[in-house]
Length: 359
Ligand code: IPM
Ligand code: MN
Image (cartoon, rainbow, N blue to C red; front, side):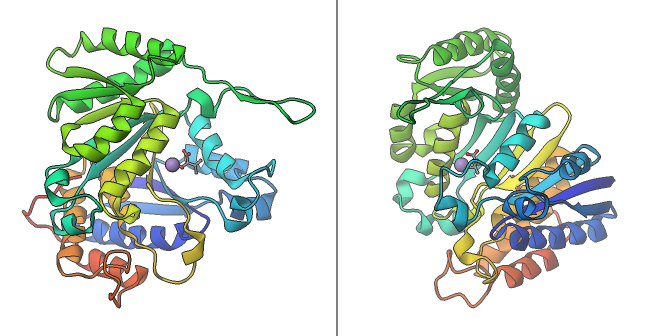
């Protein structure tokens, strides 16, 4: 298969972890005889310095001309320390999601058996945890009208959803549940919010076309608690933009480190793959960031293009790195391996085999 891939490293450790993903994709190319071309583009603080804005048109055009987008991370200490800066690196990512209509953010939370002891939760609590969050990504409070009164004492962010925005991601989530353990949990705040009541109505109606999927509802506060008490009760979670942002970070903590989890942002025309984690600017250039979340994002990408064997080869190599303790210090404080060495090991272990791990 030929794939044109846009590579947007972004800020902080983004470019470093993404470089490991490219090594792995080169290994996949070689092993399975594909052809990938990588073209780099700027986004985030790095783009603000070069172009005066976080998402220059050339980057959007590059993405539109590509089959797939690999994204690193966004944000720097300078901007984190100044939340009222009018132009912010994060806007680049938000704008890209919106322009390419990447409305479904898919975040799997799965505990690697080799890492059960890394979780802050007890082993018996996390046993069997394997759920996937479908977070709506281009609507809701993130994108509603923002206002600040003239005197700066009153602010508002509008949370708005249309039936269309809800139904397109709901179909994705139901289809996923149908192929998994057939349970879908809609997480909302329907006891308070009008938007949540619309979500329930639309999702309930769509559920009628997926009779094999059991549909459940949970209020977001209860869901946050349930995720800590019994994370293995979830199969597919469907939720709106901001609840999904919060719950996905919470979910990632179950795995003991944010450095492991990948995500995909999918629309009808484009697809982007990125780690869950942020830009970790404190680690920039130190060769200590865990590249696994980024590498597993490429596994999600390969599956998205129907390259399941290839995807499984990547996940198997990742699992091997953990079994052999070729890991960064977030997973083993005594480790002598850095971002690069872990990337090299995983790339070198991507082989055509019949072992079968999936992501
Ligand atoms: C994420 C991030 C982004 C978000 C930020 C960087 C804008 O936290 O992808 O979860 O809130 O969506
Ligand atoms: Mn987030």
